[in-house]
Length: 190
Image (cartoon, rainbow, N blue to C red):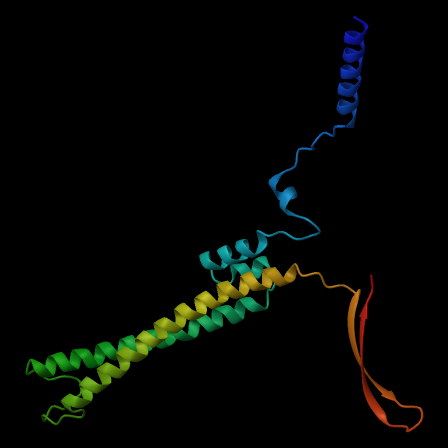
């Protein structure tokens, strides 16, 4: 009987010991779980998402306000050339169709003199169509590039830059020969 009581006492004493050693896990939000030492892995994804929805919005999210006019300027240039080439392509295409139908087009005078030959109209259509398509591809490339730039910038904003690591190039004068020497100093503080 005394052995049973001894075992029960030991069991209860270990149970109480484990209960007193155990720690309670605090209720953390998902934001607190991800953020450690100022690093949030969702920030680059948010910046890329915002830039994908509205061009320049990712740059605003990263607080790079000066980049927004650059983004819109870069995207406006291919749009301008696309519209100019598309309008000219339609002019030459309409003139070609009218000429093929035997009607007077804008490149034929009232006396019947052709200002641009049939081959010239075909060549102009090919070149303008190629330029229009190139402008569209340039726009798509620049749009993707601004999304990528917002994501990379968000990554780099979280990069730890402090005074513990420094690189300091200096000019030294050697005491014996009095020559000027370039010296590089790399300091790492722990």
